[in-house]
Image (cartoon, rainbow, N blue to C red; front, side):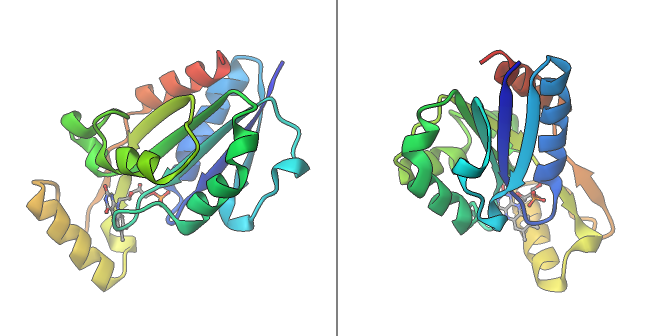
Length: 175
Ligand SMILES: Cc1cc2nc3c(=O)[nH]c(=O)nc-3n(C[C@H](O)[C@H](O)[C@H](O)COP(=O)(O)O)c2cc1C
């Protein structure tokens, strides 16, 4: 039985839901999983683990600063373990942008960091218009309108392909 550490970065919590689904799949395969929020400035030395996964969401084109910083500080250590990275964004709802090779945010991110994750994932996220403040709601509605997505300000739209998340979980369990 291996121990899997999942480090995540989230703004509104959807990435945690994805991590929880991964955890349930991985635990179903016999490994144990511990999750930690990168916003809490975790230290790898404080955890017992055999594999490590980093998951982070996009906001206005970028992952959070903590994700860049953590990877820059710990890339050498991450390399010593079977590892994976996934990104969550709404552009990934589009079939032509939903793979690690075709998702622009993941591709840009990989160019900005020194670490080369061994396994990559990209998942479409969720938009909860009523939960957003007026500025964010207007911005996201505008971006959605530009990209032919849903713009109803009272709507909640979950684009995540949970089968794909589970498949990624099985991949991690198999590392
Ligand atoms: C204010 C705001 C800005 C966002 N900016 C982008 C963006 O630039 N590109 C994109 O693909 N998705 C964008 N998203 C979508 C988020 O990545 C998506 O909602 C994701 O599920 C958020 O995950 P989280 O709840 O873990 O933070 C944005 C969402 C919000 C609310």
